[in-house]
Image 1: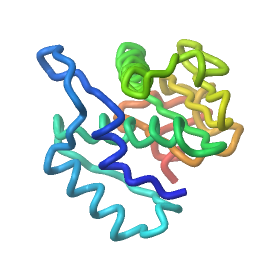
Image 2: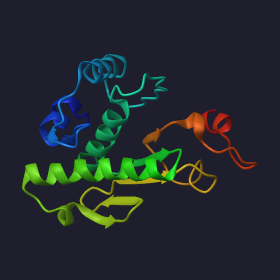
Image 3: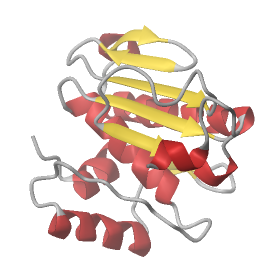
Length: 173
């Protein structure tokens, strides 16, 4: 199922502004252009693999997390992994996903518990469609092992720790 992400995100989610105000998630021009490019390059919406070398503060992480959260809510059996380079950033990413889910529930007038089978600090599982999201901090125990994932967001990969088991270069290749 191909989701019209721009419409779905703008109607389904709120976002917090930099000032901390809650408002509808209306894509900025750069986010909208990127989604249009994805639609043109991947008409079926499948097999997308993008490495985004980005300017800061353009909203790419928010957009990618919104896409993954929409997939989590609407598509069957989608596995997602969102990884950050440090613990406090991981918490921010999880808070954002939870905020998206809460705003979706509020707009659809449904309870969060009606959607979630598992609701942990690092893992959400959708009870209605089998999709899940894992959000964690980069390390040998969180990267590159187990499961089939359709959605992967590795944020700030250049700052991931290097160990004998895993490093950023090996992970990307």
